[in-house]
Image (cartoon, rainbow, N blue to C red):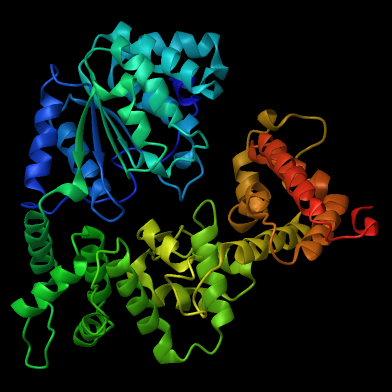
Length: 523
């Protein structure tokens, strides 16, 4: 098991992690029944693609399918829920090693085939997608001779620069070699994913279901049932009455077929410290869509939530609001409220106030040292687009705020990094330090500083304050470069330095070509 535990994998990618919930009982039954029939019939196509627009409920359906297939004790072999909020769960090269790890835990024959391979070639987990597929999945699955289902949710949230999905290309070339294995995949119909499923390699091996093509009346009935269940028991009138049928009808119309709108609305109405009647009125008075814009209903809801959270308080310091929101929205891995406070330089109470004001849009932990996550990525899409978020106090133009983040990271590292921060004895390897983890935890590296060390380069942008960024970057590299490398080494991620420096060189060349600086700036 020691060899298996060393296998590179994405933490929290499985269906039993992340706090996701399945479909409310009695909803989405026709969709779920069709998918379940496919999981049980190994004579049907080996791949099922559930595609749908953002907010139509793909992940909730994937979670429900994973739970049901897992509940029978044998069919679910592995699952990977992609997320652009996490570095490892948005990396295509994390998917196959993670699936292989889960399959090895479940099936002894698969494990018996995988472990010798990892012993002889441990670097295979970092190999090309083709090599990963052939060695980590195809070979061991052929040896194990099992019937199993693999779930991959939100494939569109993985970074993929290829015009046609790289992992679908690899899957198409390999799926015929592994009979007895079924792949259930969900995604938006993105332009690099749709051609992959329509290619000759996958078209004849895939069942399709377009979620936003399901009959609207069926979806509306499910949304109405969800609203009625979740809002029962909440008082919406001074006389103690619950929500009325006419109000339910209006909410269903505003949802426009998007389950995300329904869930976000419930989150907005439920907090006990708010007046539900007033919150309901806020939603009801927002404009209804007169066209079929994909984002209109969500934009209207998000605008209502943000205005209700801050407008009534007259937002004395919108800089704090934008700074906290931009950090939550733009960081490459979720940070805790305490880490956000450290990175932004604001007080933890100020940060908590902003986060609690919009908690209906967040997964906000009670412990300030646990990461805060967006309820759904569509809020990030909304608040970073000035054509959708038209209130300048809250809009987060990405380029400008990425620049602010890289400056905060550089300044935090400049202030906090020092020689031998973990007090490791001279002339020994990190692997020889028995209490290395304890030293790291006690050094203050974790949290904001670790994020700054690993991710500062990901916020380099070519618009705004570039001269100041160049001078700050130069000072950091001159004074703290070796301390930065040492910290990455202690954390076991020194390879991150290569990526950071390559990205920085590329960025500097792009900025220099703009001829914004004289020669002294670069010397």
